[in-house]
Image (cartoon, rainbow, N blue to C red; front, side, top):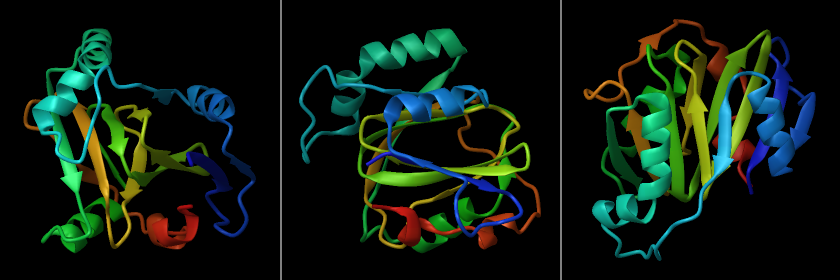
Length: 184
């Protein structure tokens, strides 16, 4: 279930806000300039669906978003519990970083948690199948997919080279609850 937790960036104990209400999540994120919406497939997605099948199933929504945001490329990432690089990839995304472009992800299946460090707060959003998040350029954030990741996501980029991060060096990410604690 999609859930938003909002913490003070000085206290990773109890969240100030916790909600699974999708409209409330969208409202709270929109107030921070973060896009959050749900998409439905235009065709059935199965375990055997290829990346092309997935992109075709969401083509209308992808095309709309690419036109609105001026994005240039799109791909599909599949992470499974037996992925050979799962631990290295998890570690790569766990440190606070920024991008010079929006980080846009749509979860086709499974889930992961985006942590946004904004205005002396940390917003932890568990994104689940059907959720789209667009983290604005230059937003400090990190991502946790757990130690047994199991998700498929569509990634949309402005830069055709894909994911390029500038790490902040701030150790804040290590202070907040990880995927294993927050994911439900």
